[in-house]
Image 1 (spheres, rainbow, N blue to C red):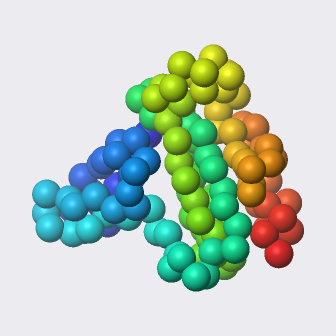
Image 2 (image 1 turned 45 degrees about the vertical axis):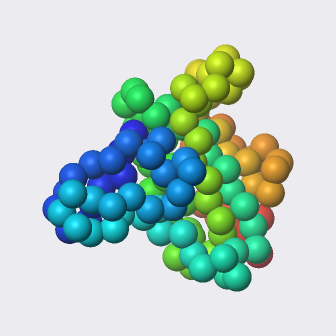
Length: 120
C-alpha cells in the first residue's frame, strides 16, 4: 500500500510511516499521513493493513479515515501486518482491521458514521 506525494505523484510504502509521520520525497516535498497537531487528537486509531500486497479495502479504509480526520481530528497509526508474524497470522484474511482507543471496531470496511460517533 502506498501514500502518494501530492507534488510529484511518487509513491511511498505505508510501512515507512510506521515510526514517523513524514517522509522527505525526492522532489523536496514532505509527504505525511495528514496527522493533526498533537493537542487536537483526543482519540487514537490504529489501522492494520497489508503493506506489501495490493489491498483495495485497505486503501479505501485509509482514504475514508483521512477524510473523517479532517472533520474530527484523531491520532492515526498505520501498521503493516507483515512486520510481525503474530499480526500476520491474526489479521491476514481480515485487513484492514481498525482499533479505536485500543478497542476492536472494524474489519474489512470502515463504517464512517459509526466511526464518527465513536470519535464524538
